[in-house]
Length: 357
Image (cartoon, rainbow, N blue to C red; front, side, top):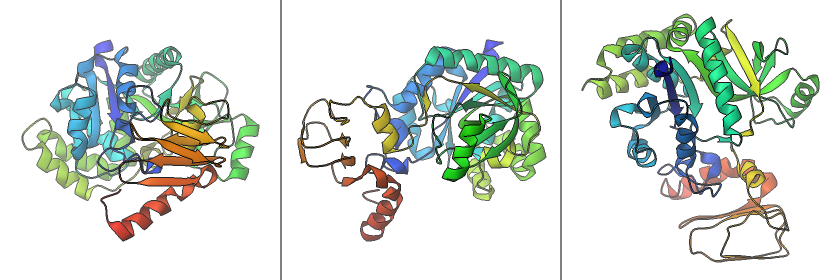
């Protein structure tokens, strides 16, 4: 039944790779980095709203982002925002949602999605998601969406399939391989990128927690009586303080024997770096991704420039650079060195504290 379908949006991340635009106070999922007129989390809600009624959404986020979530998705009520006191990676995040749903609807079917991905072909995506929901419900399986790789990317996890059926049993997961291994994966045709989008029944995922993450199962089972009551916040704080941080991939998906992957091509990107923003942005005739107004370039090629509204930038002589200007931070670095952003953040934090982070 469609009324048993729920969408869980994971929206607790900080998006540090998009510093200085993404901050602890306003992380990536609440930004319109691609210039579409809508934030990532708004796009995510609208993408699934054609499959899932608004009352069947849950958003799991850090409690400091609760008001931001309600601002970006006003269709939701406060009770639909599950607030984590601290980030503990995706397994506790998903457990919080799953044990909440088990209490209110034990027959629930869960679609779990990050809040900050790009999907270009949304109709195809929704068709595939509906297939996955039906398959997971009929087989008691844990289903993940796989993306056919277009390059040997070392920033993604990979899923190896055991056959070439539309829905294939997963052979193994590999986290972020080195370049040589990623090239081998690409050549074999047996490996797909792990999108981090999952489909399963509440019953199946809770059985998996009980089997593979028994300490999490015990903690969240004890939490259940407090869910939906005035004791919830205090109980959640206790559970998250005791809860081991672990991803759902490491904790469950790599161990379970009922994991399937549905591979699809629907224009997916996790938009995880400034490089991927550059890739998906409209460019001028010199391959620069720049704002529609206020940017004057000379002898500048293949660069990305992001400016505050009403700010003017005059740039000369840059090739393949990232220029991000905000009210209080200006970052200029070669596109090839964007992996240094974490180092930049650490240095700024060391000298200036958190006020620019």
